[in-house]
Each structure stands twice: as C-alpha cells, then as structure tokens.
Amino acid sequence: MIKLHGFPASNYYNMAKMALMEKGATLEEVRTYTGQSEEMLAKSPMGKVPFLEVDGQFITETSIILDYIEETQAGPSLYPADPFDRARVRELVRYSELYLELPARRCYGEAFFRTGRATEQTKEEVRTVMERGVKALHKRAQFRPYLFGDSLTYADIVFLYSYPMAAAVARSVLGWDLSADIPDANQLIQRLKARDTVKVLDADEKANMQEFRDAYGMK
Ligand SMILES: N[C@@H](CCC(=O)N[C@@H](CS)C(=O)NCC(=O)O)C(=O)O
Image (cartoon, rainbow, N blue to C red):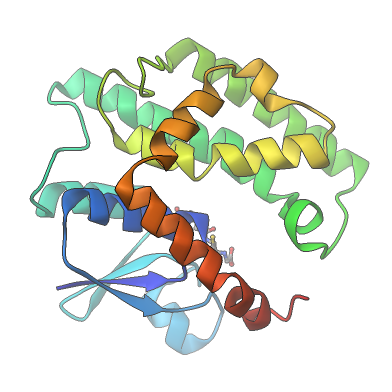
C-alpha cells in the first residue's frame, strides 16, 4: 500500500492526496512535518513534504509523485490520452507551480503566518513573476470548464492548491486583485471544491491547522 507522508495543512500534500483519492487508491497517511534532520533527509532529501513511501523506498517532488500515481494507480486517468495534450497539461501544472505558487510562497510568512514581512524588493520580484504567470495561464488555460477541456486533470489539482494561496498573497501583500485578472478562476475553484474528495480534504486541512501551527511554534 502507498504511504503518503506530510500533513493536511500543506497545499502540496493535498495535491498528492487529492490525486490518490480521485484514483480511488487505498492510501495510508503518515503525519510528517518538514525538517532537516538526517532521518528526514534520508527519506526526503530536501526535507520537504509530501513524499511517497513505496515498499520502504521514497519518492519526492509533487509533480513527480503525480506522474507516479498516474502510472501505477487504477481509476480515471487524470491526463488526456493524446501525448501533445498531456504535455499541455504538464505545462499548466508547471505554470501554477513555478509562476503562481512558488513566488507567492515567498510572502506566506506575511500573508498567513505573521512570521515576517516581505521587503519591497521581494514584493516587486514576486509580482513580476506572478504577472508573467498570469499571462502564461491566459495563453494556455481553457476553463472549459476545467483548465484543460471538460474533465479533471492534474492541472486542476495543482491549480486548486496554488491559485487560492497566490490570490491571498496578491490581495493581502501586493494589493492586487488576482481574480480580476483571471476572471474564470473562482468559478473553477468553486467547481473543484464541490467534489466529494475536496470536501474531505478541506475538512482534514481544517482539523490539522492547530497541530500544524503548534508543530512550527506559530500562535
Ligand atoms: N517542490 C516541492 C515543494 C513542496 C513544499 O514546498 N512543501 C512545503 C510544505 S507545503 C515544505 O515542505 N516546506 C518546507 C521547506 O521548504 O523546507 C514539491 O513539489 O513537492
């Protein structure tokens, strides 16, 4: 059985967990917080979550984990059949990850945790990358009604756990209403949030929030 390490307040963890749930896979969740201990690095060399445990061995990096899930688990395919279309979905995954979530993450301390304030230079850098990410999404995302066509793909899963954080950072740190620039985003997020899998993920995330804050010494 696949074991998924991480914690439900982690957006990346939820991407991997949602993919497994959408596949109807049997999974064991192993509560693991991030860190740099040798024990952790032996399993997750960057000390990050999520990571998968398969027969006592470990796989890290969410997009790699998603591909592994696709290749090993039964259930509906979360990629289109055509190789070109699959590449397009992978592009969308990368756009959300690298040009929305990752830059926004630099301001999570200020936006969500009150653990620090972003400098003006950081804000400028973050905004520049995100603005380009938004333009890239405009060129590729379909919203028909999913990011790529009429069925759920990994692009939607990664968007669901990237866009809301990016929008919150944009609003609270950058004074920028991201939803005005991606008008179809909110409707897609609402559609995704109505899925049974996401209702469970949301409840698990809420239930984990205090433990998560305690684990990192946050108030
Ligand atoms: N590139 C990684 C990013 C995962 C990530 O940043 N996870 C966060 C938790 S949501 C983490 O482990 N942070 C700890 C750290 O950056 O050291 C992936 O795709 O899995």
